[in-house]
Amino acid sequence: METNLQYSYKICAQITKSKAKNFYYAFLTLPATKRRAIYAVYAFCRYCDDISDDFKTEDKYQRFIDLKNEINESIGGTFSSNPIMPALIDTIHRFEIPNNYFFELIEGVEMDLSKSRFQDFNELKEYCYKVASIVGLISINIFGYKHSKAKEYAIDLGMAMQLTNILRDLREDAERDRIYLPQDELNQFGYTENDMINTVINNNFHELMVFQVKRARAYFDSGIMLLNLLHHDAQGCTAILHQLYSRILDRIENRKYDVFASRVSLSVIEKLSIMAKFFLISLISKTYKTNRK
Image 1 (cartoon, rainbow, N blue to C red):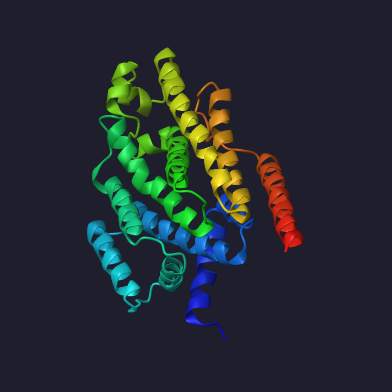
Image 2: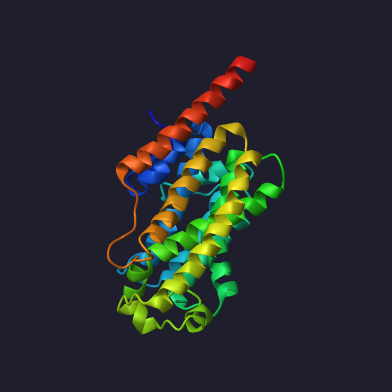
């Protein structure tokens, strides 16, 4: 019979597999203990997003207050009926993850409830840090790292991935009255919110997107430095995620920045090629470590 903890980890794995197939297969390169911990973290992130995005959910602020209280109580040993919580708390304790990371993540997701515009990049950067870079910091606690500099690179990789998401989803977000690109940069390049809503592609939009892609790529260039500071058994997973998202950025550029016509994505063959390459690297790393014992 499964224990409550085993069941909780199983539920987290199922959530990850059904909701984030790219992440799920990247996570398969991790050893079992780290892999199931990452599933727990992803399931928690998904739980937060579902509260924010569910149009049927009333009083979302109270739901997030309740979630913070639930985390505190669970850390203290009193669990609710939430099936993901035992796995999450076990992960927090096992990998000594700072509790405040999860509260900052909730604060970031909460921002979507009240903030749909960002005046400048500093405001957007704070949002990206809380919803994405924090996940990077949580992840490297699980992955294991060799130098404190890894935190800086994990923050930058999270930033790069979130900025890529924002560029890819401009149309969908505008339809929900969310404009994530900084207002001062829209003004700088002479591109209006109405242009965004009406999916206008002109020279102003092109120059705006060149600017945005260049910034995101700079974060990717910094984030890739994380690989050499991680424990070997986590490098393949991180490399896959870096490649998947940086390739999406390349695809946006190759499409001449037209993110309106259809959702920018990678083909199944491209994804499998990336995953196969780094699965092989992970296997070689495991074999090397085994032979040295």
